[in-house]
Image (cartoon, rainbow, N blue to C red; front, side, top):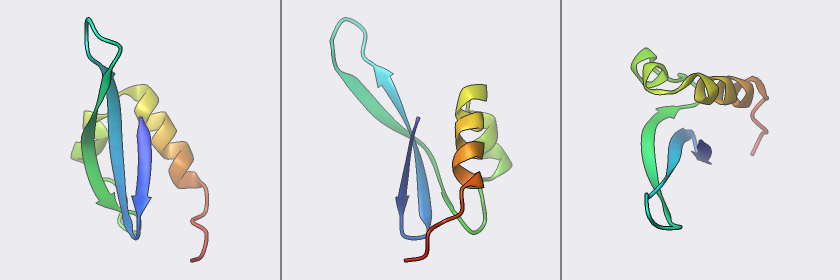
Length: 65
């Protein structure tokens, strides 16, 4: 899972391989405001590994601009 930050918004992107090719596609799983955190529905859409990655990412303090 890729985590992209743009201003106050955080976008969670899942990268999936396309069968029979060497290409992959990126699917936006969800977007949330960092100050508010992810919704329960968004957390339910993530796999266990993705939730762990997001939890570690959110635990790091956001650097001041």
